[in-house]
Amino acid sequence: MARRGGMGQLLVAGCCLLVALALACSVASGQTSQTGQPIKLPPKATFQTITIPKNSTKRLYAVTCHERRGKPCVVSCPSRCPNKCLAYCKYCMAFCVCDLVPGSSCGDPRFTGGDGNTFYFHGKKDQDFCIVSDEALHINAHFIGNHNPAIRRNFTWIQAIGVSFGQHRLYVGARKADVWDEEEDHIHVMLDGEAVDVETVKNTRWVSKALPALSVTRIDTVNAVMVELDGVFGISVNAVPITEEDSRIHNYGKTGSDSLVHLDLGFKFHSLTKNVDGLLGQTYQPEYVSKVDISAKMPIMGGAPKYLSSSLFSTDCAVSKFRGNNVAGPVVTFAS
Image 1 (tube, rainbow, N blue to C red):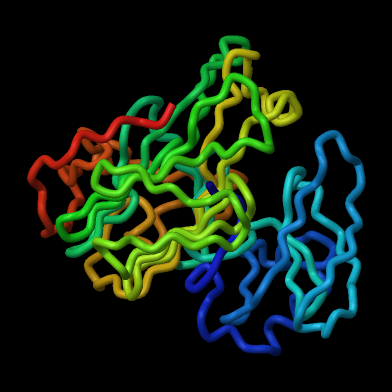
Image 2 (cartoon, helix red, strand yellow; image 1 turned 135 degrees about the vertical axis):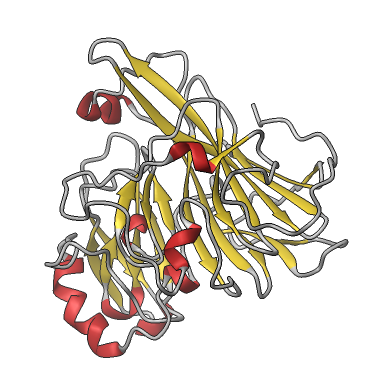
């Protein structure tokens, strides 16, 4: 159910109008800031999603935004997001969802932390790692992977997340597909073992009867949703495949038997404590100092064993801070 949207800490609170204006020129041309740091936008920024047709070489698109009172603007989708981009209506700019920070995870897992620094974490195929662990919130990620024997390298992506809070378990995953169909919805959501069904209409919103603070909203007709728990988190979820072109450029070694559908994620947190931990969570600590070489071309976060969890909803990673319910609940299997 998800695509590429983002909010809140994704849209860094407190970023002033002057900063947005200063970035306008670089963003409009599809660039990050000159410092190499991801782009920061003001709170309450609104967007139009631009989906690029399959095999299309068109990069210029006209969008009509409410903020411009119906006056269209023309934006250029950056080449690094070949399938979809976001148009920032107020200043008529376009960029990829992974330019929004902090709290994003995209592709061969590339995270942008709460400190604004970007790093890679390769994890391991078919294993689960805690990415956020706090007293009342725990998020694990399930990794899928592909081995390219030609270059003797393994590649990994996030296929699903398991979110534990209170007595509840929320599953958000990407359905496996041999062949990617952009008209088909590849996102599967479950709450406490029960499927969440959201009509495939853009902006449709599902609200839990058992937990009214929890909602799922479609950002796009299919493959894009925003999952929100009031006062706790907002998670934008985008189901995306590895295309033949992706595989050719990055040497993924993809075969025709699996399109390697995975999740691009954006996180907004409202109430993390200063002791929050986990692969991504630690970067939100007030005194956090980055553990990666941010000057490297591919800064890599090590220490995988301390983030390893025994299953998607286990809270037993070495850095776990979760104090909620850890009693086995409904069995949750991966979407397929």
